[in-house]
Amino acid sequence: MSHLIIAPVVLPAVIGPLIILWMRNDLLLQRVFSIAGTALLAGVALYLNVLAAGGEVQVYRLGNWAAPFGIVLMLDRLAALMLLLTAVLALAVQLYAMGSGWDRKGRHFHALWQFQLMGICGAFLTGDAFNLFVFFEILLIASYGLMIHGGGEMRLRAGVQYIAYNLAGSTLFLAALGVLYSVTGTLNMADMALRVAAMPAEDTALLRVGAVLLMLVFAVKAALVPLHFWLPSTYANAPGPVAALFAIMTKVGVYGIIRFFTLVFPQDTVIESVVADLLLPAALFTLAIGQIGILGTRHLGRLAGFAAIGSIGTLMIAVAQFTPQGTSAAVYYLIHSTLAAGALFLIVDMIGARRGDLWLRLDRAMPGQGLIAALYFTAAIAVVGMPPFSGFIGKLLVMQATGAAPAMVWIWATILITSLIAIYALSRAGSIIFWKSFEVEGQELPSALELAPATVRGPIPPKLEPDEPIQDLGDAPANWLAVASVALLLSGIVALTAFAGPAMRLAEATAAQLHNPDAYVSAVLEGQEGTK
Image 1 (spheres, rainbow, N blue to C red):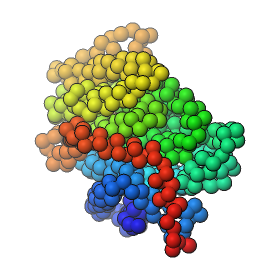
Image 2: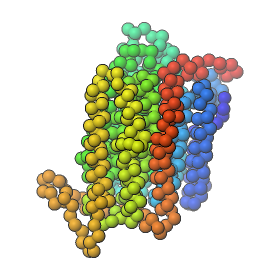
Image 3: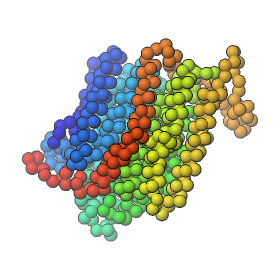
Image 4: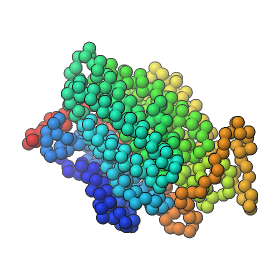
């Protein structure tokens, strides 16, 4: 038993309070300790991936109490991969927050950041359903503070909506756990899997209710249609670095669905059928609404939010197959979509800081327009799934995994048609921002949208002042830190493309481990000699 398994939870849990109690008035110290902590988290996550690569499920029993009575943390290939993805994304985005100056707008940015990482990492490591709820609440409480970081009326309004919606989701989560506990008598996931497998099929009616409630909870977190409407406004109004980190938060919901419906419920074909029948149509509608939303919006922040929704739809199509091939495609696409969404949110923030707002309108050329345009179109190609980047490979894998599905025609048609819509929408947005800018001294030309009748276009909001403009790229070294952080995420996409073979072998090994729950159950419940 390696004590480093608990490090991804303990490390941010220690650094966060230290920042509040010791460094609250010293931004430089906050930056140093917070960046060092996140970098150390990335190093630990890399080591845990090496540890999990052997295929053995690692278990950490807190206080050396025996499962299922004590709290256990669990490390397998999927948990280790999600930890590393979280740490890499968090490190890149935190560097961007420093370079862009976002961390100067509130005293507790770095402390909240560490608590957020604590909640996310704990959710990936826990082997207990109730503690999954606890870690969900930790990451949500931190995200409430990060969501309204910097203040502003629109941000506060979106934050209140976000809080209210997630409180409702938390209540539903408790109800689902109560139902499952009443049926199985346990909340340890390995013990629950054994008890579910031993239940007669005719006695699973209440169990199916609990499983569907749990799926709805994770659907709220993952922003699946029709539970998605909180996401575009929340992400559009959140600070850019916060929205980029939130790209991993929707994946916590996806992780929950994969974990529960491969571990706890796979033996019960009735439950799996019920969940799959609900999940696949929701995934298709999520993909369609996300990509159509990209086409319909006039705000870059909402555009990035709808792009994130669309990627969740594609991901959940693969997950809904509940086959090793579908799960391996989902694991590969999950990595890609997280990096692509994070990069897109940061690029959108860079555009807004230089233009003054995020509305799609004609404006003068921005400082550093050529570099930002290159970053935008690289991220756009990755998001829509065009060659040569990993999004194209990921969508091919998803289509290949659904080739034998009864709804194959609907799945393929939805993926291909919505991809064309997204290509057009992102190209149009990029051309308005970068190619149709003008350099007329003292004059601002109206866009075609502004010239349209008011009944057609609706009101055009006035141009706003930026929260805190980034200086010209050549004038401040800190700006290169912001650009470098975006380049780091995009380089991750390039690496995922260049090493698609090894990445797919890792995804296939991860899927094989997930669809063999006996190894997980035996690791948690057997070999407990010497425990309390």
